[in-house]
Length: 313
Image (cartoon, rainbow, N blue to C red; front, side):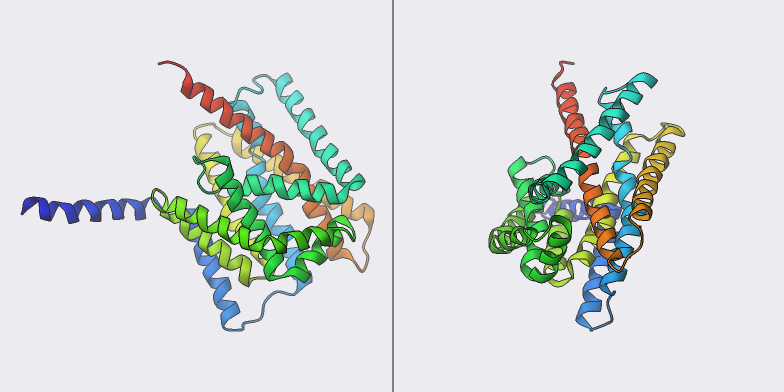
């Protein structure tokens, strides 16, 4: 009898523990995602395309860039730099990679777009099943980036044309054709996360529904700002807890500098009737330039952590 009473209590305790360990970004993202879906369901007015681009640019600058601004701190933890000279060298290499990616995009835009999507799939897919195989994370990221091309082919195709020229539409067509595989990949990732981190399954399902139902820029805005950037920023500050004034200072500097650079570029280009397209180009090509070194830094830190864990004692 005691065992029969104890079993439900253990199950209840485990369920309660899981609820308590739901990350704050899951709650914020879920609430915002459900609100957005409700607005669609009830036919409430959505944002105009121009306002979507402007709002995305502002929110990515304010909420998205700071999580990448933690890269110098991640590099320091991984032993990439220890001294002021090392810090200067790290920043120089980082900047060279950013400029190199942007220049490559200008020379080979379609190839760069495809490479950016692949790198982004690996990066975004790591929001879930982080301790599982690379293939599983890629499936999730591939699905996340490909489903919008199936649900809103005209809008994704038009955006790719802005980013990579007329041939960019072919990339959208390929993604749309692979949509069944993309959805299957998201389903596999959701099932894999169910046992140990059910909140991730909820995130994947909501992300999939958003990608199917919402306009691509609205979907990306909600996911990137409310979940992806929020998660990485929170984790980064948790790692640097007790680090004094340096972490906040670096985040501010490394957020402000790209914003000023983007603003200066738009000023040099000058206002025109295609300002939303110019913002879209600066935003996503700039993100591509920042994503590559960010991925390099994050990957290096993970390898560094594995080496430390493998050390005896």
